[in-house]
Length: 570
Image (cartoon, rainbow, N blue to C red):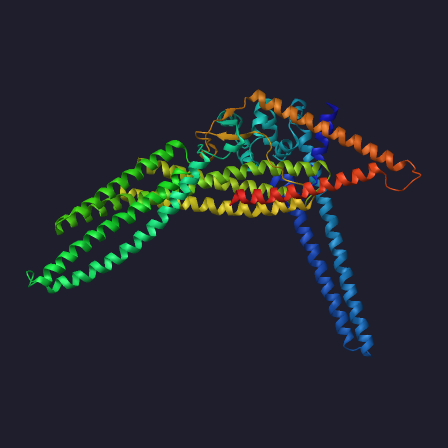
């Protein structure tokens, strides 16, 4: 227990020395907000005063230099003025920095007061959380922290799995609604290779679907080009037929009518082919999409196959037509089918884009947990990165924005599923696209922040570790469709298992700390003992070699993490 208390005190201390921006955002307490507000105003005033004073000092020196007896005196006076201006500015900045430190110290006391008000049994619940989860909960305001800590240990462990923004939103509910909300949240484990998927599609099947999509795309372009050529040919023949209106029985006019019939048949067939390849392109994209559930994919594929069959039948009718009336009937059929499918194609294309956004949201959420772990690891080494905690909070908030729009988009697609009305489909597509676009914009911000965060962690000597476990934890929220694991096999982690895993992680942290302490003590003892020979020994060289290899591995791993995390957001 002593060890756990030590970890708690260390975590409280690390939490309390965050930048002013984080204190304002994270604590939510009126006291902290007032401290930040007053400090910012005072710091701005001091900085402005320092800048103004520096300008005045420099101006006075340069004005005096204008009346100097010699050129050398003028140069000296200007140099002295610049030096004095720099000194004035430096003094002001130092004063502002002292004020900032004072404000941070005040906020530190506020954090300590907040945690000091917790009941003893509730403090013990926090002690049983691994460092990154403790840090997230400790940033809640005092009222919500007490409410959360008053829950059962298993519920506390479950809440700690949520992202920062989602945790803030859920913990703000009253106690009754909070418990109800927690019943809708589950922690599950899925195989690493199936992470972020809604269904499992064999790699070979995905690759073949991509090949078929590429082929359909090429055929679509060919069909569209042929369609345009046949239309021009048909339009030219129509002009010729106008001249035959009064002399239809002449040889020239009969030949022109025959050519016009064949051109019209080809035009209708090509029109159908353009639609067929358009539907086929979408079909192959859906076939290889692991971000759709089997039910969703099957429903879309069935609808697209029906459309392809109808267009194919209409094309066959046009091909077999022997009269102008039969060609017109086939053309109307093609037009009718495409009119019925046009907005459905747009809807399904938007659905695919929406589903891909859901996958990226889940990848980003998983990354947030890894970023929190990296931040906690830096903190345990006493490394502080200005504004990093605030950036991760902003990262989490942007993910939540994307989630909210994803949920609204999902509601639109559910309406479209029940709709059979063309005008209604069009309105639904527009509304769904709006939320897809807003979710994409939020995810673009997520990607931008991710690059900044990964760089900051790397520059500080940390790393965002790759997932090494064969099975990975995911949070499934019944109120958040983006978290649904779909048809992928997922095993629920019981609340008892959550508690046990947290406790195991804490014990692992303690073991690491004990090892590091022992190594540090050994190093101290080694450096304090006098050595007769300063030449490097074999063991020293081995140690240096190992250190070099470790450093190289860390750099390579960090670079891989950075590229992987950035790729996951695109």
